[in-house]
Length: 289
Image (tube, rainbow, N blue to C red; front, side):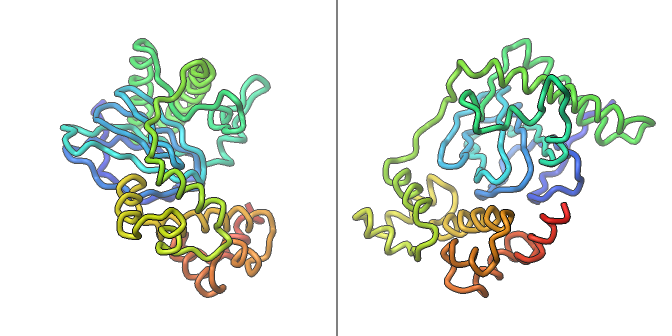
């Protein structure tokens, strides 16, 4: 069966309520902004020089590495501009779907659980594991897009096998620390400051004064290391917090204030622009789901 490659799709929303898989290969990498989504993601690097920014940490990846990304974690790939080929397989998994797929022996969402002491975002398979992994994921992509009789069942079976293998590797990975490159001390402190003050008014000027640097230097350094402007990062963090509070039943008006928005109109516009639905529509969907 012929290999199936997709043209890169910049969307960050799932179209199915189970899982979706993509195989991308490009001579030049597409630029991807820091983003988040409400589903699990497995990123398998086949070729390319890549560092991955995940919630304030830059993880160095090698060919054959797997990266596990949890719902609502801010993240973005940083591909070296001189990388001749950028190839990866990306698996998106609906959160509720995966969490309902468990047996008496295994919870398939366990590998994503950041509450576990041994949790790691990065999995580095052995040479033997990598060979089997590449074959299985390639077959998953082919069956997922095939129109042959029973291809949907084959894809489902391959998905289950892969998730079992992924959890086994994650369990073995605990003795190997992630290879992470540190952000600059300034950006680390700014990220912490933003996280601790989301309910308060924040501007680039105010943050720069807090850390005794010029706003131009802060803006350039932050954008270079994080991949988005200070303003955009603050907005994303506030919207993430808003989703979490709305899901707990906190009234939208109170959420607006708790997340540092100047008024409800600003909150409404930002929320709808980012997610395509209003805060109340989000609450309705959470309750009905």
